[in-house]
Image (cartoon, rainbow, N blue to C red; front, side, top):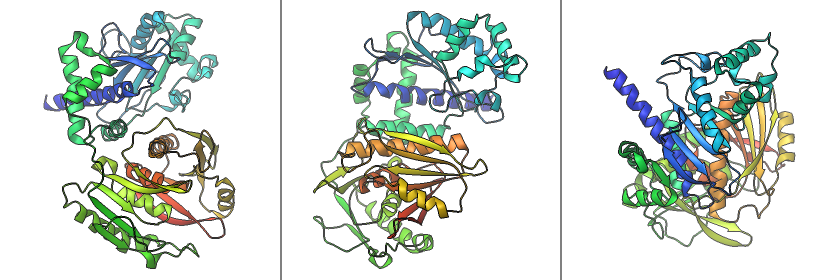
Length: 489
């Protein structure tokens, strides 16, 4: 009985975390949704969390069923969706019945979200970019395995061809989704973006808030932007922002120089760098000397009451800045203010700036199917694709895929206008790496950055639970050399 209770509590925690994650979208001023519900009456089996689209929005209303499993002993397949495990209806029937009832009111999406992955027979028909079913499923030959399963779908749902096609078009199968720890980090990312406190305690408050809405029932389960903000204020979830950091960290790399602040902690690494030859420290030097120094400085800063908000100064390679960010993770409550030269002026950008709507457009090129590594090139302030092509000609690594990402407006010095843009690109990059790792079952991500230093710092703070990330620095000849490997867990 104890184990059953623990499993049920973990399932509730997962559902409430995911509900909170979705409802936070209501805080966006340009959100396509005007209200949400938790365990909405009348939503059938897709009632765990719902987001209702504005009348002037092109988005469909979103109905979500969340399924959490205690381990990964099984997966969802074309057949298992039709199995009747409890009651008189299969999971597929429950989702279909919900869709049939709800779709009469307008465009909708029915989502199944679960930490169980899709079996190959089902997964091969799920689009990687939006979790929808590929139209090819409906045109499978009746003699094929998928075709036989489709016949069972039609018989069980008693659906005509047109009706089944419409249902499959509106169905979203977000399978192999995050573990509880990963979901907590995703929630922290989104809460931070909206200026909320992050970490274990604020997360627990949010879960309790969702649970309370469900417990009270009735109109309490309807959430609007105004009611959500009121609840956040009542629970003291908005972060208290200081005007300026009270502690500072100065790291000398390419050169030693003085800054506008007196450092609380100062590290002189100039002997390990040479800008003219583009010499950088080896992984061994980083592990044995530089990283321990950085951790010691971190420990000294932690002795101050406001030691988690840090003014950072230093001229360093992008990969070293990335590594510094990784040592002071956002989920640990660390925030930075850092100099960012932009178009002839130097600004002070903050890592806790609310991300803008800026996005990266992504192109994936298939590589060697035998490979277990992914190469990700992020071109923000310039296009490094030509240098990367040269790099690939001599690189012995078999990449299962090569991914190229750049701002939708194209790379250039005007692509990042503010710390909000830098934060937005950092969030998108982390989500991109997470998605690619799952899609390709990759063991390692290789990262090449052509980007502002502040973006690299902000990205480093978000690189947690993403496995090994190998980084590269540009050489004097225009190619790329191995730099540090970050072990993010």
